[in-house]
Length: 308
Ligand code: SF4
Image 1 (tube, rainbow, N blue to C red):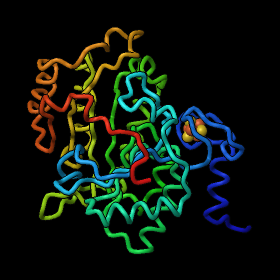
Image 2 (image 1 turned 90 degrees about the horizontal axis):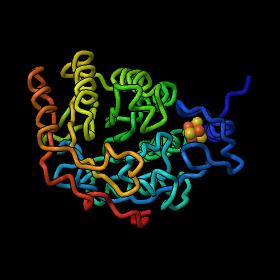
Image 3 (image 1 turned 135 degrees about the horizontal axis):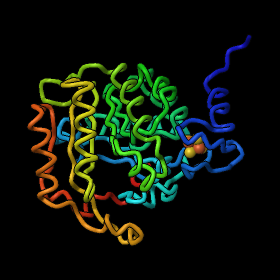
């Protein structure tokens, strides 16, 4: 039997797409958009140094962030709404994506930070492989939602160095209400297991920059401390110090959330303190916590196709 080459595999993957757990079957090669909002082309809204990730990712030099359009999860509270709905991106090919990686490395980026890559993984994996073969030195960061299939993550094995996973829900009802994904907790647990199979121990260089490993982020939402504590409990009880936790409080209530009145406020200081105290009470040491000032809309980047 003849083996498929990379291009044939990509065409097959986008044919009746089942790349993500939505398995919506969109004919992306024919120009049809899936639930993720995009067809089989690559759309990038920004590629620039980014200084607002965790210190071991951004450092003082910045992380080379590539923001992709579209998202298979589409949370109602998304802080990058226009982008996640498939807009603001410029269509590019795989060779241009590979060039972007080198341009970011030349600008001094600590890593290539692929933001919401899930629905493009076959194309992005090709660009990652091409860049490695041509001598790209800095690590690749997969900055994702946790709603990925094990199969797609497996295809990144040997290419991805760092996983920066946003573990959103342990509460299936909240996952249904805000992301139409009641299976999110189970999918996220499977995804995390695969990420840790690929990167079982964190490795930081002498300057404290991560070279390999898994960071699990959790964005605390208003009134959802219990959900957040359940995420922290699960991750720490399952993986202990193999994982760095990042507890975030920057939730920004954007105007379109009127249908979800419970989300129309910021997280209170007391809620965030409860979550941090809970993590400390478990004895967690590998954790990042956030200053209050980061809960500002000014931290949402401009989607102006800079660097694309
Ligand atoms: S990646 Fe997009 S097109 Fe493919 S299954 Fe998921 S939502 Fe559907």
